[in-house]
Length: 124
Image (cartoon, rainbow, N blue to C red):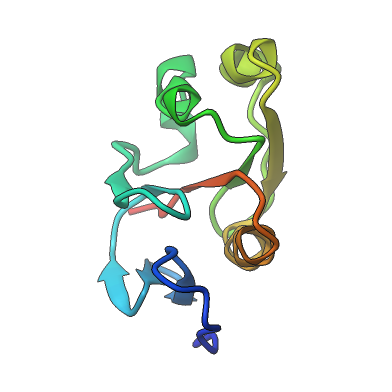
């Protein structure tokens, strides 16, 4: 799916996605990523839901977002609370949704000026 790019300056915007990729500012990424509005896109070293760990979610804590939008792949799957407990302890909310909904929600929250991060799982 192609999304229409809004004029959000130099902020990272999801401009398209498909079953095996996500486009950020028209640059295609074929693996899982961590996405923030004003930071470089970070590869997220995971290729399946079963590989989730507390350490993978902890990678986001240093960015201090208000909320993390977790795109759980092609279907909605919730991570065990112990996996996101480190973020919760730092008062960082975690919202889980399927990959496509996470891309759209990230764009909306980013455009509203929220301190949002997206953890987007692209399964191999």
